[in-house]
Amino acid sequence: MKSNTEIVATMQQLAKKQHISISELARRVKMAKSAVSKYFNGSRSFPLNRIDSFAQALGTTSEHLLGVEMPNNMIPISGVVKIPIIGVIACGDPITADENIDGYIEEPKETLPSGNLFYLRAKGESMTPTIPNGASVLIRQQPEVEDGEIAAVLLTNENEATLKRIKHTDKLILLLPDNPKYEPIVSTSENPIKILGKAIRFVSSL
Image 1: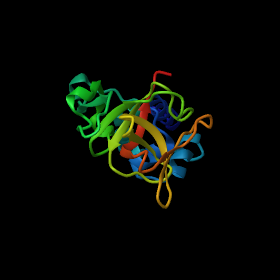
Image 2: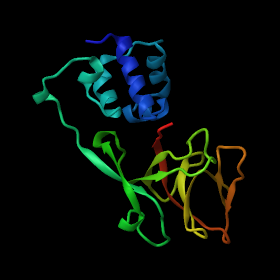
Image 3: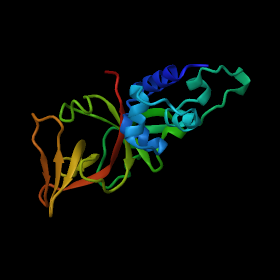
């Protein structure tokens, strides 16, 4: 069985590989971000009674985190979900219509949030360094997001989806890039937008 330090190191490796931030991990295990941070920086010992919830959040088993080998016939098989990768989104069409799908990414079912999910590939550098060009971004379909959250947004005049951080004003919605070299996009009656969903996490080969 692994030591407390080794267990935490394994969790850190899994989180890094899946691009799961401390904030997202804390949300999944229903704990304060500050508590998870203390486990990860070693200022507080990891409580083994929480091993199951952390294993589920990281898409693995408690045995793997603990370093306990199981016989092959006893290893639980997790359900896998095929999430569509969306290429082109046409106005009025269902997002996940067959003609819009460029492929699929398989994910362990227990690591996914509820709701309708799809992947969108990031194009360009407007969201760097947060989201690199070419990354596959997991989106939960929903018509609204809170200020400061990253959303997949349909620019209806251009019939094209983009990823931007959302800010609401009295009458307008601003689409803000994380890269200061790019200008914000302003939603107006002449330049309408439609929020497709909230960015949950991303996968990148970088």
